[in-house]
Length: 214
Length: 214
DNA sequence: GGATTAATAAAACGAACGTTTAATTAATTC
DNA sequence: GAATTAATTAAACGTTCGTTTTATTAATCC
Image (cartoon, each protein chain N blue to C red):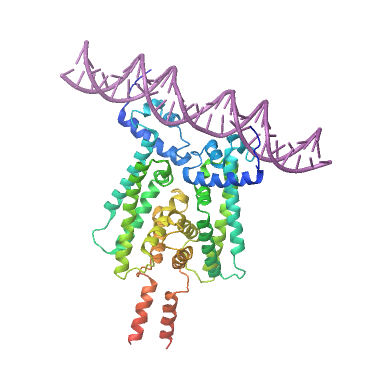
């Protein structure tokens, strides 16, 4: 046989991407076969090669677009003002929302790096580093302004990213907590972790100073 | 050919385990072939089957022993007294030391769960859950004693474990920081995150109260 | 020191892999 | 409505996979 009635390149490509993300997230890139993916889409394996030259290129495309979408979402969410605490709040909230909404794609981007060839790996790591740098800058600005109390900026940035990305490991949208509730709790933990001066600590310090001044 | 001079079952099995952990951590379980593993050990692929009945059984054995070692290390490190803050400190310090010393095995245990069949998966998750429960208990005890200020025990436990396990993603023993320095920083972040009453906050609250009492 | 057991090599098994080639039909263009 | 292009199937290619079988040698036992 050959071209089927109603077939459309755009739709097929979108279906391949979706199915690939789901399958790779569940079984791992190496474990997913092109025939398995094709069956999920409802075509023959050879049809996949019309859209992606190789299996690895498919993986790389999925990862690159995920990382570009993440950077794009942050650019859209980043507040205009340059208050470090507002920026930190936006960063954490955006990160959690984005990753919860794209659990499978995040799993792929985080777990399948070792299946990329050197050049493809480099291009993904570049995007990832750029994203992490955004958080480091916020933390440094906050520390410089005396609004955050941070021991080691790079280390704290990694700790926060690990912590807030980890949400996707256990979070299921249909269970006990909503995304907003989870975000609120993680925001509170982030603020404590960074010693943000917006809380009880700050009040006590001020009260302490006032009382002494009497 | 056949048995080689000086060959020894115990040594060969140990060599298989070591090589398997390294290779699987680097390339992923599905990507590692039995022939590749055998070559690394210096035997033929068939020899592996004298020690492990299947490839999956090899993976399961590595994971189970890793998790059992982790639980064993915690039992050995757990302090005798039941002060929640001392227990939390020991938990974090032990976790970081153990994972840094066994980066590759940790990667395997955390990333290759999806390559296990149902029964094997269940047995590993059981061990993992038991370990996580240790931290949840500490956090609950600390909160009950008024020593920790925690919003959601389960959620905080997951956040802490993600954060402190994340060390292995970027930590390299030969670089800027030593394990002890990293542990100190992560301990400080953990204490802040959980609102542990051992810090400036606590001092200010006390001073505040003293000044008011005059 | 002969019999037995442990440890391995060598070769083969069928199945499945990523990918390519060629043929065929649906949709589009002019 | 003929010519062209897009989308797909069917079949095949060579390779590699996990695993098994069989043979062979080293170490151990009595």
